[in-house]
Length: 334
Image (cartoon, rainbow, N blue to C red; front, side, top):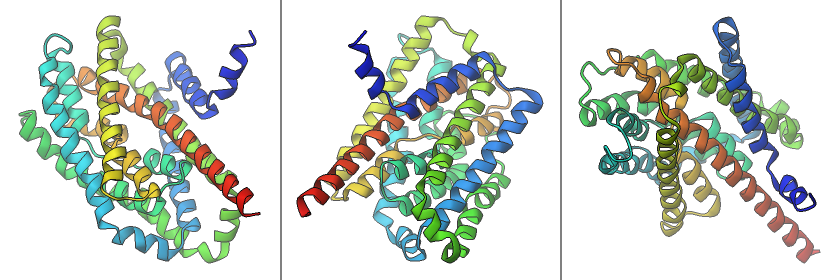
């Protein structure tokens, strides 16, 4: 019993919160009006998140984020070059490990843009380059609305692939406008937001938990968890884990070799390794309108939950390391 206590104490409360949220969504998934309400709550949380980021960051920092072109190119290369190449290479797993529909779903994951809110939230928690993350993640998501359908048509031979251009407007309205509003009122509330980090941390993590609950609720409502055997599901999970491990390793060590500092290294790793469930699910209904999308989006849902768990652990560890280094520096200088 005594040996279990240290393990419980070392368990990241955020990871525990994600696991509990997954359990709740699996047992009591939201549907109908409740799902609509949670979806809107997620949108509101994301809007508040970007408003607080705008209020906290100076205009000079935000402009510096725009000028950091090497950072943005590196993240986009990870998202739209490295990932698709890995997806193409994964074809060798068919049919011994993956069925053809599951492989198509995995390839679809590799063609999607990065997440926005969770990428930036993890960068913030890990003390990375938040202005750069905001620019890169937002641009990746907007670019993905146009690039992903083209990649799907090219690599998945999907006929009639298209996209809803209003989604691009939605991204601008939900993400960039709150950020600009926060910038506009920063001179009045910026010092308070910087001094009281708890509200920002609460929105960071709360928005991710809402995304997890809504995503798993939608999956339960689709009934996709009952379409596969346990063995095939575990094999798919293992493939997703290997894919994530490869990309995390390439972005972390590759960015270091390219000469980026620690803050940019964190940003490249978290933004370059993510795939957007929020973009991928609605886009799948358009790109694969004539096909049942349950098996196609299953790899996306597994990869999405896996990336949240792994990156939550990584962000917490990096934050603790940064805090320890600051404490050590303060102690040595006093």
